[in-house]
Image 1 (cartoon, rainbow, N blue to C red):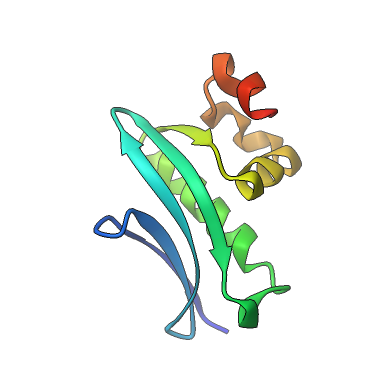
Image 2: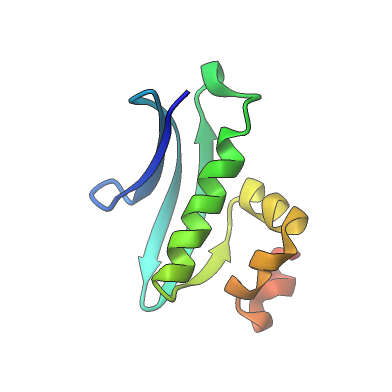
Length: 101
């Protein structure tokens, strides 16, 4: 399965496609130097294949590349960050307790 993650600024979301078919997305709100990750969703047909994790990681990698602070409003993103502490530096230290990370 060929996977691709891309930002769709017009829809304010990162999308993951599997063999060219939309498989999931992370919606966001972009502010001055901050990206708030609001909601992660994966199509039922693609669940259980780790796509949501790959999508979140690519989204966070993009935030790092763009020098954006991350606000993990989405419960899935918070859980993912808990399992991948090497990405916690993206969340401002003074806001981590607010998100439980």
